[in-house]
Image 1 (cartoon, helix red, strand yellow):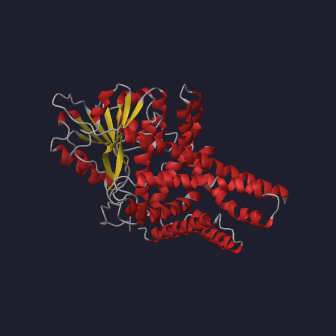
Image 2 (image 1 turned 180 degrees about the horizontal axis):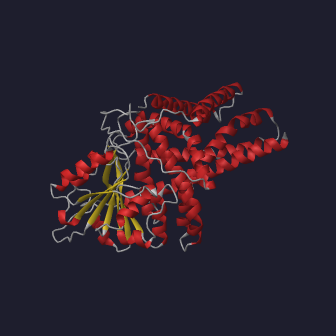
Image 3 (image 1 turned 30 degrees about the vertical axis):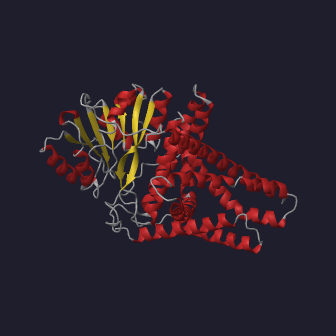
Length: 496
């Protein structure tokens, strides 16, 4: 029993320690961001001058079976303000359903308006999104390449506010903008996603940029210098996050990513839990794959200690989910050890201190939430319930994401799974009956339901032992896993 208890304590403390150090890295980004705010050094949108020489820009739209949103995407991109003789649009169409014909009709409509737009079809869908981008780049006319996923609706002045930033420095390889959300208020799930993404774009990306650390192109809503892509080795399909992979390869080559937070690229958030899960799976597994591929190169590179520290936890951030699952699962045995065993009190008290990592994450998200909001107390009133729900769903998704991370770390290859889109704007539209949903229930979903009950039992044990240190954690875990289980079943029932 002694060695079992010791093993549980060591694993629990080690996982909490990783979360704690990761949270410290995020807290440091908050401090950098706040300092930049005070000094007013955060980048502003570019302005076109009278003597500005417009470069040729290629806009790439990687598409695969996007029946609901592809027409909206093409229409918005065709309206971009840029000289027609300096603008090329490539619809990189890998579709194998009726989306193909819809794209052909929409492309022809804009060609008649004088827009240089093409439907680019590959012989085979090799390399998924990365393969499509690389295929299109080989024939692209532009010196710069803007990329928009199917769920984006860029404003007409997007290029005018972004492309001129490249003139500041020949080593700027990417200009990344902030994502907006056209359906943020649609449901609780979209509100929580917007909350998390806003913190990433307001605090994390700004913090990395202002601190001179590595950051990443977010896969869409940004512009690449074509020479940068070529110098960094081009788009690769050996990870599911081709954007993160190329971003780091480019920065290791000496290229810079310029973050342009006041230029917003509006997009639609996934409104169904199954869509959120497919997106999270791709992001977390791809990040793990990229860490295995590039972290050794980062650690060997002639970079500052601070940049190496932040890059390490940037690349390993998805591993947090493995640590969350470990601490969550072991938290109930820890309750028994704390209250029924002797000799571990000092070690247990020390390990409990690492729960402060979650407090640091709350501070991190507070700084993202307070942006663009007025009135301190009103902001607090809105923040507390949303932060509670965000943490719950974040923890509830931890098992799903931890499996994805584990697969990435051991090198298990899986196909690029698209995120279903719905054509929802504001509160209008519905995800029900989407033809890209699957009715099949994943066994992992059933396990999520059982874990919700398991952590509900932990909540009861905390009351039984009068041990309230872990009570908030078990409350969030039980609610989070049951919510994720419920929403997954609900969305599966409404599949077409």
